[in-house]
Image (cartoon, rainbow, N blue to C red; front, top):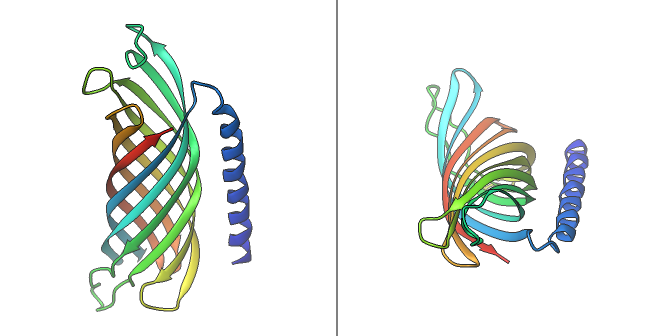
Length: 210
């Protein structure tokens, strides 16, 4: 546990450094601070061996604070939202995952339901181009990062902590100057106390650009 807490403090320092660094850069007119909230439907697969493999279903909520930095690759017009830009992103990711108990295994047992609160830094890259309507933008992006998780077996007083890593594919469609709709497909893998779990989810939400 002490080793986990030590790594967690390091992740917290990295996240704080990212926030301070990119807040300073956000003073540049090109930088775009954003806040994104999503609800996700999730499936998880947990195993301890090849013969003890089972599936959970559940849901999650996520919150991402990022700074986006566009690098314009081409401009077919003078308008800001025309042309193509490469987007770089850095920020912090927070999530709450709630998974039900797994389906029954062949021996009559199953993996417990669990919920976890996670936090960590994230980085990403994407491409921005003209949106679905005139004057709007859309972005396809890929982001990733480590997550420090504090978990509880649902309806028990049993707690544990574990590290995981995630990779997320997302699409964002601007609806006005500050708001965008987004859809994401994240995949997360973590080594929990009762086995290795892979979580795949489908999420939808909104993004606010300051």
